[in-house]
Image (cartoon, rainbow, N blue to C red):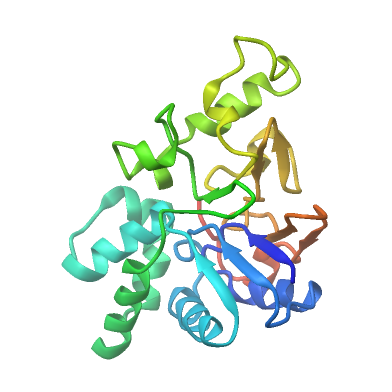
Length: 241
């Protein structure tokens, strides 16, 4: 059995389907999705439908992303959020325009069931963004940190290769878990095109919401699979700005 971690999808269902084929995913594999299933490309509804069905046949863990929380809030309240609309929400709203109430209810159930984080038996942590409490995720005061925080990734980048773990200045947050897997902040911001490791943090977001591919990583072998650039599946669309 492989444990495969998948980066931010942002409604790029076609890229996800290609990725699953490229990695020859089977029902024996454990698939860990790091969140942000919607907001970006046009197939928000189709993506959630696909994930709901995938969970019926495969071993899946679904982590909550910030865009998933924003979408859920809109589905429940219909409140307008200018920031959300600007950053991918407009395509999600269009995708749900003609969807019946039963489907919307099923999608809200799915989004509400998402996990803030997953910690495996080998002390490897999976979450969308980060955490801030120096004692770890079980002591986090603000649950929104799990899917909004960027300081963990910034911290990992800042100390990567500059301090040894034996140095008393080494950040305690990075000593709590063997490995940490995140998405949320595209590695394209630092000029990378594949999942990037800094300290013990592995960032799997390769910019699928923009011009990059969707990526998957085997956490044991560190083998990487990538889709074609997600934009190539939706040539008439802009994705996220």
